[in-house]
Image 1 (cartoon, rainbow, N blue to C red):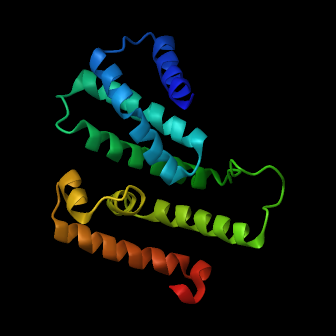
Image 2: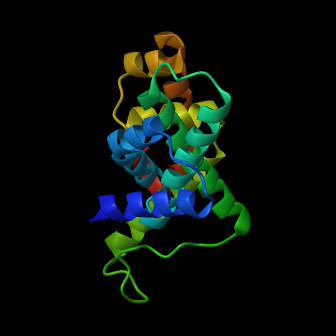
Length: 187
């Protein structure tokens, strides 16, 4: 069901804009829409925002395809584009000073103090990741949200494994410092 709704939404936007959908874009969407959505959802924690990211990424790919050479590694491009677009959503949400309601919330209060602690920690982590530089945020998302190894990250981003390790280490230190109030003695 999700597949149909995401596909239908993107295609309807393109049709409304009277944009011809190239076969390559259609194939890329069919092959990679799940990857883009999951990546965005892991970062935003919200299906609606992940849908927006999905549409943004493929619309950018459409525009890029009209103006640029073919991509060498489409999957890598889409993953990175999803990470960056999701971080943009988080940053814009923070600048708007709006607080999204959790999707699973059915009432005014969370079910237990533990849920409140986890929710607060998740919000604090989201804010802290949004404050990272784009490169650090991207490496963090690839390492800890996507489960990439340092070697895979280095290959994806075209940087050395040593640089990836340094970025991961410094990012963890920075996040640990930002999240200290939520972690207590565990940090």
